[in-house]
Image (cartoon, rainbow, N blue to C red; front, side, top):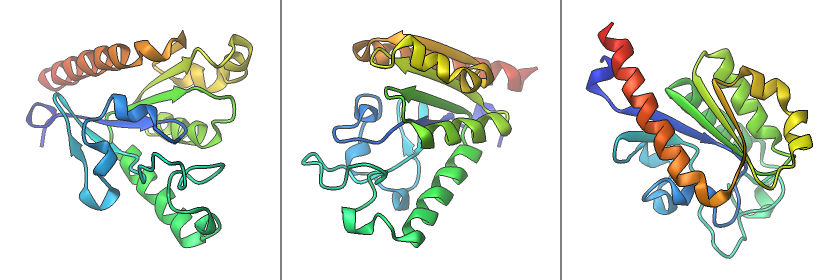
Length: 178
């Protein structure tokens, strides 16, 4: 299948949290899971990550990745499955869009590294809550990105994301034609 026959495949890297920022960007994410497969959007396909949407916060906390109640935190099989699902989705994406809104986004840095190693297009957005000095501490990841963006207000994230998706989709089609 060539690029003209499919939509752009997008992976959204970043910390998973209660009332996650991804819900602003991905319609239907709240009720979707890995088992349901990729989630078709207008102009692109969302390939991951998928997690349990829990507005009361019971599935979210340090190191949970939105996976299950806290008693499952040390279930090695669940952690391995989540890692493998994310790795597979990154391998199959065209664009990894990372939103870093905290300086302890350790898993996000691993996701970015995987995408860079696989020569995927990588866009990193440092939110306004990450001080410039903290973003500078992440210079190595930013250096590997195709496009780093600093101090983006959270309210501007949907517009910025939509612009990136549009331009990446256009360039994907152009690359296939040449």
